[in-house]
Image 1 (tube, rainbow, N blue to C red):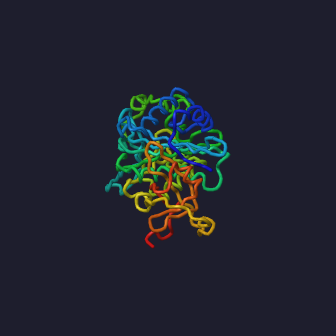
Image 2: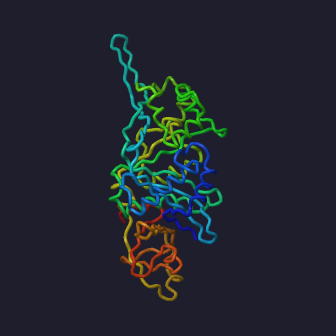
Image 3: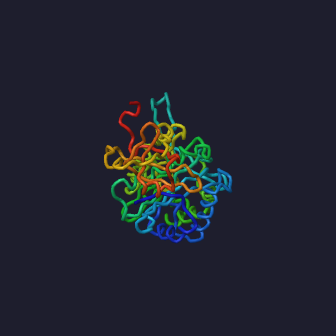
Length: 349
């Protein structure tokens, strides 16, 4: 069985191994043991509520309970940009017109921006290739929404997710080569590594503050603005299902889109429900109708756990099999939070 759970100090080695397989472009999950160790310490303190909510970094791992293997990782940062700069490009428009010669032009521009500072961020989503089957990716990604729905008071009203930008098969980033390299004079992976360890002051020091005209960039750089990495496309679709959308902000290095939403408007906030675990009667599970898979989590912040189940709540109660109760560290009488894995076609029915 696969269980998504709060990360613990014992997961450090597995987390490092996971980070070695991610590749470039994901600055929040780099194979640096000190960075991983420091981040893990913050995550453990976050679930223990020993640091302020805005400093918290809730990390979750997907564990295969059959063999103890860590199959994936994801995270929620309480707020970004409060202790170190948080930059994006905002796509804008400048209009130039002249009545005298009857010319009117609209030019797309990129503005260096700190607009998203203070937002809660979904980040560090990575599923091991061996587990990229069935609903595993959905389980790993959507666990964060159920966590937010259970503990909304811990997060800011705006939620964002920086998506990995487009790269060619060789690893070349057309956007970085067309723009960033002219200012940073270093390889994309080097810039990526510097930002991963919190060295971001060079961005403000080297990047121009005036608007950048998109039309001045090479065509291949223009074409990838707001476009995700091929392997990131499924993750983007999942986030959009849950209520996130693109509103014109992109990463300054690879131009990957930044999705955003209001926490109060997330599907999990509207549709998830609490249910009480009831006793399982003989034959009840065998006779239960097959439903759309349900995301089911416990309601324990310090020991948050979530699974995918075929059992649905009925009239505020849910008859979970014993093995699923055990996976959630729950028992009859406990409350769990439930949400359909996939959005209902007509959620108002």
